[in-house]
Amino acid sequence: MIMRQILRQKAVEVAEMKSPRRSLSGALKGDGLSVVAEIKRASPSGGTINGDLDVAAQLSAYERGGANAVSVLTDQVFFGGGPEDLRRLRARTRLPMLRKDFIVSEVQVYESLFLGADALLLIASALDRKKLCELAALTASLGMEAMIEVHDEEELHAALEADPRILGINNRNLNDFTVDLRTTERLMEALRAAEGEGVRTVVAESGIKDAEDARFLAGTGVDAILVGEALMRACDPAGAIRSLKEGRRAA
Image (cartoon, rainbow, N blue to C red; front, side):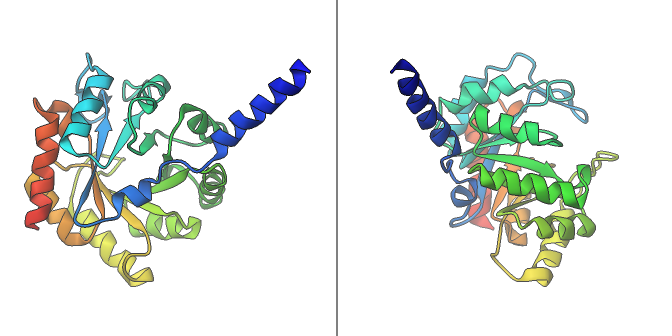
Protein backbone atom coordinates (compact mmCIF):
# COMPACT_ATOMS: atom_id res chain seq x y z
CA MET A 1 0.00 0.00 0.00
CA ILE A 2 2.63 2.54 1.01
CA MET A 3 4.74 1.63 -2.04
CA ARG A 4 1.79 2.41 -4.36
CA GLN A 5 1.29 5.76 -2.63
CA ILE A 6 4.97 6.61 -3.00
CA LEU A 7 4.99 5.66 -6.67
CA ARG A 8 1.85 7.72 -7.36
CA GLN A 9 3.48 10.72 -5.69
CA LYS A 10 6.67 10.23 -7.71
CA ALA A 11 4.62 10.07 -10.90
CA VAL A 12 3.12 13.45 -10.00
CA GLU A 13 6.56 14.91 -9.29
CA VAL A 14 7.97 13.63 -12.58
CA ALA A 15 4.97 15.04 -14.47
CA GLU A 16 5.58 18.42 -12.85
CA MET A 17 9.24 18.31 -13.90
CA LYS A 18 8.26 17.64 -17.51
CA SER A 19 5.36 20.08 -17.67
CA PRO A 20 5.81 23.20 -19.83
CA ARG A 21 7.79 25.87 -18.02
CA ARG A 22 7.35 29.62 -18.12
CA SER A 23 7.89 30.63 -21.73
CA LEU A 24 10.99 32.77 -22.16
CA SER A 25 10.24 33.35 -25.84
CA GLY A 26 6.68 34.43 -24.99
CA ALA A 27 7.86 36.81 -22.28
CA LEU A 28 10.25 38.54 -24.68
CA LYS A 29 7.84 38.95 -27.59
CA GLY A 30 5.87 42.15 -27.27
CA ASP A 31 5.84 45.87 -27.91
CA GLY A 32 9.29 47.41 -27.89
CA LEU A 33 12.48 45.93 -26.50
CA SER A 34 12.41 43.47 -23.59
CA VAL A 35 15.16 43.18 -20.97
CA VAL A 36 16.70 39.95 -19.69
CA ALA A 37 18.50 40.93 -16.47
CA GLU A 38 21.46 38.76 -15.52
CA ILE A 39 22.83 37.54 -12.19
CA LYS A 40 26.61 37.43 -12.66
CA ARG A 41 29.26 37.66 -9.94
CA ALA A 42 32.33 37.68 -12.21
CA SER A 43 33.53 37.10 -15.76
CA PRO A 44 36.82 36.27 -17.53
CA SER A 45 36.77 39.68 -19.25
CA GLY A 46 35.64 41.81 -16.30
CA GLY A 47 37.06 39.97 -13.29
CA THR A 48 35.11 40.10 -10.04
CA ILE A 49 32.00 42.23 -10.52
CA ASN A 50 30.17 41.74 -7.23
CA GLY A 51 31.78 39.17 -4.97
CA ASP A 52 29.44 39.87 -2.03
CA LEU A 53 26.29 39.58 -4.10
CA ASP A 54 22.94 39.01 -2.37
CA VAL A 55 21.19 37.20 -5.22
CA ALA A 56 17.72 37.54 -3.68
CA ALA A 57 18.11 41.31 -3.30
CA GLN A 58 19.42 41.61 -6.86
CA LEU A 59 16.45 39.65 -8.17
CA SER A 60 14.07 41.89 -6.25
CA ALA A 61 15.67 44.97 -7.81
CA TYR A 62 15.32 43.44 -11.27
CA GLU A 63 11.64 42.81 -10.67
CA ARG A 64 11.07 46.37 -9.44
CA GLY A 65 12.78 47.70 -12.55
CA GLY A 66 10.45 45.76 -14.82
CA ALA A 67 12.76 43.05 -16.17
CA ASN A 68 10.98 40.64 -18.48
CA ALA A 69 13.14 37.64 -17.56
CA VAL A 70 16.21 36.69 -15.52
CA SER A 71 19.44 35.00 -16.62
CA VAL A 72 21.56 33.20 -14.02
CA LEU A 73 25.23 32.34 -14.57
CA THR A 74 25.81 28.94 -12.98
CA ASP A 75 29.47 28.41 -13.91
CA GLN A 76 31.56 28.53 -10.73
CA VAL A 77 35.18 28.50 -11.92
CA PHE A 78 35.06 31.37 -14.43
CA PHE A 79 31.93 33.30 -13.44
CA GLY A 80 31.71 32.78 -9.68
CA GLY A 81 28.16 31.41 -9.80
CA GLY A 82 26.69 28.02 -9.13
CA PRO A 83 23.60 25.88 -9.71
CA GLU A 84 22.35 26.74 -6.23
CA ASP A 85 21.83 30.36 -7.31
CA LEU A 86 19.27 29.20 -9.86
CA ARG A 87 17.58 26.81 -7.44
CA ARG A 88 17.24 29.52 -4.77
CA LEU A 89 15.86 32.14 -7.13
CA ARG A 90 13.40 29.84 -8.89
CA ALA A 91 11.10 29.82 -5.86
CA ARG A 92 11.28 33.62 -5.49
CA THR A 93 10.00 34.80 -8.86
CA ARG A 94 7.39 34.22 -11.52
CA LEU A 95 9.68 35.57 -14.23
CA PRO A 96 11.09 33.08 -16.77
CA MET A 97 14.61 32.00 -15.84
CA LEU A 98 17.43 31.27 -18.27
CA ARG A 99 20.29 29.04 -17.14
CA LYS A 100 23.45 30.48 -18.65
CA ASP A 101 26.41 28.12 -18.64
CA PHE A 102 28.60 26.16 -21.03
CA ILE A 103 26.23 23.26 -21.69
CA VAL A 104 28.08 20.44 -23.44
CA SER A 105 26.35 17.29 -22.15
CA GLU A 106 22.90 15.78 -21.80
CA VAL A 107 23.56 15.51 -18.06
CA GLN A 108 23.61 19.31 -17.80
CA VAL A 109 20.29 19.55 -19.65
CA TYR A 110 18.66 17.21 -17.13
CA GLU A 111 20.32 19.13 -14.30
CA SER A 112 18.81 22.35 -15.67
CA LEU A 113 15.36 20.76 -15.50
CA PHE A 114 15.85 19.71 -11.89
CA LEU A 115 17.13 23.18 -10.96
CA GLY A 116 13.94 24.73 -12.29
CA ALA A 117 15.24 26.46 -15.41
CA ASP A 118 12.67 27.54 -17.98
CA ALA A 119 15.33 27.86 -20.67
CA LEU A 120 19.02 27.18 -21.11
CA LEU A 121 21.83 28.55 -23.21
CA LEU A 122 23.53 26.53 -25.94
CA ILE A 123 26.63 28.13 -27.46
CA ALA A 124 27.07 27.28 -31.14
CA SER A 125 30.84 27.77 -31.05
CA ALA A 126 31.17 25.22 -28.22
CA LEU A 127 29.31 22.39 -30.00
CA ASP A 128 29.45 20.63 -33.34
CA ARG A 129 26.26 20.78 -35.40
CA LYS A 130 25.12 17.27 -34.51
CA LYS A 131 25.54 17.82 -30.78
CA LEU A 132 23.88 21.24 -30.98
CA CYS A 133 20.80 19.72 -32.61
CA GLU A 134 20.70 16.83 -30.14
CA LEU A 135 20.89 19.06 -27.07
CA ALA A 136 18.31 21.47 -28.48
CA ALA A 137 15.93 18.58 -29.17
CA LEU A 138 16.43 17.12 -25.69
CA THR A 139 15.80 20.52 -24.12
CA ALA A 140 12.51 20.89 -25.98
CA SER A 141 11.44 17.33 -25.11
CA LEU A 142 11.78 18.19 -21.41
CA GLY A 143 9.54 21.25 -21.70
CA MET A 144 12.31 23.87 -21.66
CA GLU A 145 13.44 26.27 -24.37
CA ALA A 146 16.94 26.49 -25.79
CA MET A 147 18.48 29.85 -26.59
CA ILE A 148 21.22 29.19 -29.13
CA GLU A 149 23.98 31.79 -29.08
CA VAL A 150 25.86 32.79 -32.23
CA HIS A 151 28.59 35.29 -33.10
CA ASP A 152 29.01 34.97 -36.87
CA GLU A 153 27.14 33.81 -39.97
CA GLU A 154 28.54 30.28 -39.92
CA GLU A 155 27.27 29.80 -36.37
CA LEU A 156 23.96 31.41 -37.34
CA HIS A 157 23.33 28.82 -40.04
CA ALA A 158 24.32 26.01 -37.67
CA ALA A 159 21.84 27.35 -35.13
CA LEU A 160 19.03 27.53 -37.67
CA GLU A 161 19.48 23.82 -38.39
CA ALA A 162 18.60 23.17 -34.72
CA ASP A 163 15.46 25.32 -35.16
CA PRO A 164 15.45 27.11 -31.78
CA ARG A 165 12.61 29.35 -30.64
CA ILE A 166 15.17 31.78 -29.25
CA LEU A 167 18.34 32.99 -30.94
CA GLY A 168 21.01 34.87 -28.99
CA ILE A 169 23.46 37.14 -30.81
CA ASN A 170 26.62 37.65 -28.79
CA ASN A 171 28.39 40.92 -29.54
CA ARG A 172 31.47 39.63 -27.72
CA ASN A 173 34.06 37.55 -29.53
CA LEU A 174 34.70 34.70 -27.09
CA ASN A 175 38.23 34.21 -28.42
CA ASP A 176 39.59 37.68 -27.69
CA PHE A 177 36.68 39.26 -25.69
CA THR A 178 36.38 42.26 -28.02
CA VAL A 179 32.86 43.72 -28.27
CA ASP A 180 31.10 45.20 -31.30
CA LEU A 181 27.37 45.97 -31.16
CA ARG A 182 27.32 46.00 -34.95
CA THR A 183 27.60 42.20 -34.77
CA THR A 184 23.90 42.18 -33.94
CA GLU A 185 23.16 44.49 -36.86
CA ARG A 186 25.06 42.28 -39.31
CA LEU A 187 23.54 39.03 -38.11
CA MET A 188 20.00 40.43 -38.03
CA GLU A 189 20.44 41.29 -41.72
CA ALA A 190 21.70 37.76 -42.39
CA LEU A 191 18.79 36.27 -40.44
CA ARG A 192 16.23 38.27 -42.40
CA ALA A 193 17.87 37.16 -45.64
CA ALA A 194 17.70 33.53 -44.51
CA GLU A 195 14.11 33.34 -43.30
CA GLY A 196 12.37 36.73 -43.19
CA GLU A 197 11.04 38.65 -40.18
CA GLY A 198 9.69 37.46 -36.87
CA VAL A 199 10.26 33.71 -37.12
CA ARG A 200 12.24 33.57 -33.86
CA THR A 201 12.70 35.54 -30.69
CA VAL A 202 16.10 37.25 -30.96
CA VAL A 203 18.16 38.46 -27.99
CA ALA A 204 21.23 40.71 -28.26
CA GLU A 205 23.91 39.95 -25.68
CA SER A 206 27.10 41.58 -24.34
CA GLY A 207 28.45 45.11 -24.36
CA ILE A 208 25.14 46.79 -23.51
CA LYS A 209 25.79 49.62 -21.09
CA ASP A 210 23.09 52.27 -21.36
CA ALA A 211 19.99 53.64 -23.06
CA GLU A 212 21.97 54.67 -26.13
CA ASP A 213 23.05 51.06 -26.69
CA ALA A 214 19.44 49.95 -26.14
CA ARG A 215 18.24 52.43 -28.79
CA PHE A 216 20.80 51.19 -31.29
CA LEU A 217 19.90 47.52 -30.74
CA ALA A 218 16.17 48.22 -30.84
CA GLY A 219 16.79 49.68 -34.28
CA THR A 220 18.25 46.39 -35.50
CA GLY A 221 14.95 44.62 -34.88
CA VAL A 222 15.89 42.34 -31.97
CA ASP A 223 13.16 41.46 -29.47
CA ALA A 224 15.29 41.74 -26.34
CA ILE A 225 18.62 42.64 -24.81
CA LEU A 226 20.44 40.60 -22.18
CA VAL A 227 22.30 42.84 -19.73
CA GLY A 228 24.60 41.59 -17.00
CA GLU A 229 27.67 43.55 -15.99
CA ALA A 230 26.09 47.00 -16.33
CA LEU A 231 23.27 45.99 -14.00
CA MET A 232 25.54 44.18 -11.58
CA ARG A 233 27.74 47.28 -11.22
CA ALA A 234 24.82 49.72 -11.01
CA CYS A 235 24.08 51.38 -7.66
CA ASP A 236 20.39 51.24 -8.61
CA PRO A 237 19.74 48.19 -10.81
CA ALA A 238 16.00 48.84 -10.92
CA GLY A 239 16.60 52.37 -12.16
CA ALA A 240 19.12 51.10 -14.70
CA ILE A 241 16.53 48.72 -16.17
CA ARG A 242 13.97 51.53 -16.37
CA SER A 243 16.56 53.66 -18.16
CA LEU A 244 17.16 50.89 -20.71
CA LYS A 245 13.43 50.68 -21.32
CA GLU A 246 13.21 54.45 -21.73
CA GLY A 247 15.90 54.10 -24.37
CA ARG A 248 13.94 51.50 -26.25
CA ARG A 249 10.84 53.71 -26.33
CA ALA A 250 12.85 56.49 -27.90
CA ALA A 251 14.15 54.16 -30.62
